[in-house]
Image (cartoon, rainbow, N blue to C red; front, side, top):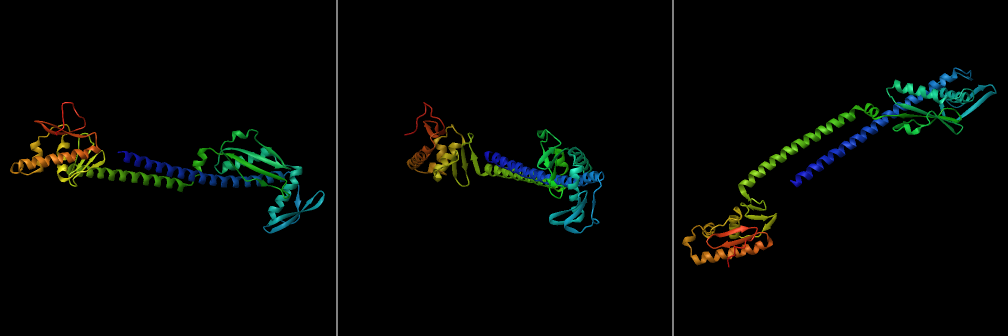
Length: 338
């Protein structure tokens, strides 16, 4: 019974562990999917904000935008033609956007609150609902749309992105995502994995329990046929192997002492006449020499009593006219045979 309880606990412990792994896998998967949506929406917000501000200014670039890559670009300003160099070659339209952003920062700087409104709208279009916040960095000074950062408990942040050619300004977005958003952006295959895994575990548990019940039934049938368990459930006798166990520990026996203890243990605290014991040990004790039968019985009872010393809670007692009995207690009116 104790073994079954331990096995059940281990089984459910494994179930909990597997589901915890699936939960963390789901959380990681949802997080990655949400990050993709945030990054795409944030990039789109930068372009929209740039277009909104550029339309209010008149800044013209030298040349026509194309998909060619450049390492530098020239911008015509009120002070004349200004050249901007880049660390790596980038598309010319991107280079022009970065240089124009640099010029706009002086005349029409980015407004964090306007940008945050654009960012929130772009996220809503993508199906991601949540409170948003923008941190705008310009000349090493940070400007935030929120004063209380503590209100953003489950935030996911976009990368910090420089928006101008000389990296004097950068923006970073924050989104407060609740648990519903995590469930919404979890890939379907995670849910399929969860259902298949738990269905498999449930099936395994069902068939395992069914098999255990079948084994217990067979064992109970086999025990009934080949063994005896006393009323106290402390003495187990295996008739087939001629073995006796008391509280799980084997009692040393001989063929004769096994037959005696088997008879006495059948009815604890019940006297068994000496004649009945003799009939168990000998097929026709009346045909044997009575002295020989008596001496051999006494010898085997002595051997059995000696072996029972390892189990002091059990003793064999004798009462004249009644016979022998196996008992757990010694009564004052009973005296062992001498």
